Amino acid sequence: MTKPTFGTHPFLLGFDELERLVEHTVRTGNEGYPPYNIEQTGAAGFRITLAVAGFAEDDLSITLEDRQLVIRGRSRDDSQGDERIYLHRGIAARQFQRAFVLADGVDVSGAHLEHGLLHVSLQRTAPENVVKTIQIDSGRSQVTEQSQNRPSASPRHEHGKRITS
Image (cartoon, rainbow, N blue to C red):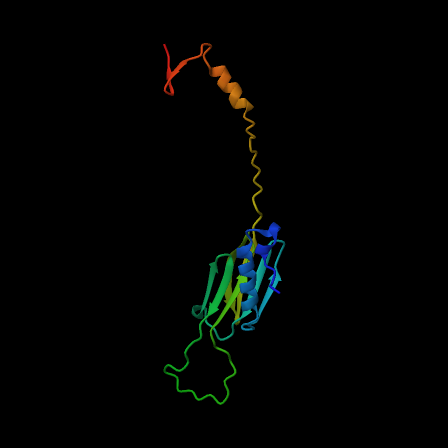
């Protein structure tokens, strides 16, 4: 038995990209590091908060790629010039990548790092309601216009060319 996809349903043609984004989110969503919260901050505002203790601002990057908000953290190499001997090392300083798929009309309005928490603010913009009237060409108006512009006498034609006298 095969897995049903968006492309196999006749009413969902053209949703291949959406299916790819959903599958990517499911694959990457199972990773549990770093933990995060998503909260609504107003009628049109949201905030994603990631626990990134141990990461400096320079260790983090935020990009928007094809409606995907991608947050990356790179681990610092503590071995350079550091002669520490760890008896237990439980503070995570590993690399991570978290991706969040944003809906159309949701934009990143800012980000700040505070007390080991990275806050990314999102704002939903109201979509423009564009109403456009499309004229229906029935063909009658063209015939009427052509008949009004014709001369009363029928012109002579020779090999597809119009000859007027």
